[in-house]
Image (cartoon, rainbow, N blue to C red; front, side):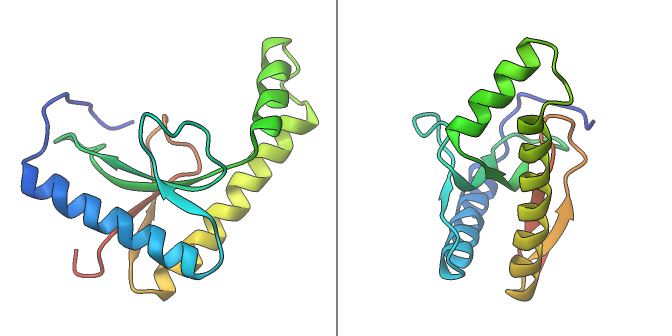
Amino acid sequence: MLGMSLTPSPQHEVDARRRLAFAVVETLTAAGLPGHVGTADRLHVPGAEVEVDPFDDGGGGVFVHWVASQELADRGIAALESGEFDHPAIQLKGAIAGAMAEAMSTLLTASGFRIEVSDDDYRPFALEVFAASD
């Protein structure tokens, strides 16, 4: 995992990340996928969630990951809490996240974005998104 800092990035960089995040949402919704920029008041909304990390460290940037249904998340959490680590709900959630990451990567790359698979342990199956000029 990358080093973490609680030092905010300069405001112009955060603004550029927000513009990029909205462009990602626009691209994914044009393809027919539900998408939104994640905020603290929009927890667990199914679809493509685009995160703007405002901090000035290796984890700062724009990330997109797929959010499955609340019902599937609840089944997976219940399985984890009961120690059923090979429960079908956990397997399905991982399969969905992997498949959707691949699909979103294909769509975003075709639209001119540069994509890297996030190596952040706190963002499994997430894609880091960069503007084509980065």
